[in-house]
Image (cartoon, rainbow, N blue to C red; front, side, top):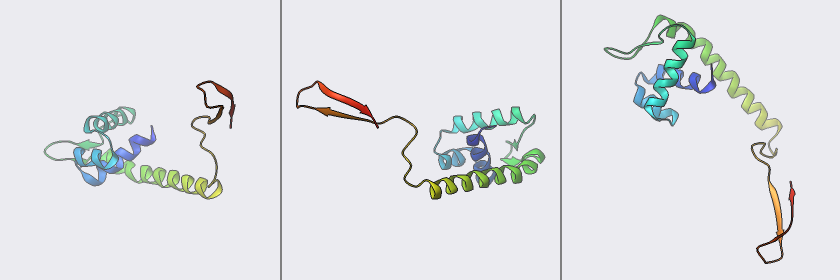
Length: 112
């Protein structure tokens, strides 16, 4: 189970519409649908009845409180990280400082 699947499930639980849930999550409708299907496969059952309208199944209703709790814990962890490390550098990619003498050749480069 991945966090984006949990976010998509919760959005769909509230919106009860795949298109609106996808828009709310900032993804395409097929991406949201595929993530929900993968979650249903992992949980061995449908989470929503799709016709005549979108409504949670018994399984969907049963797991929703647990997934809401997971989402709350993740948000709390993010908030704690923001409070404890507000000036921490990004860990996503190394940053480099390059000095030049005006030509196209660098004098030196150092990782910061």
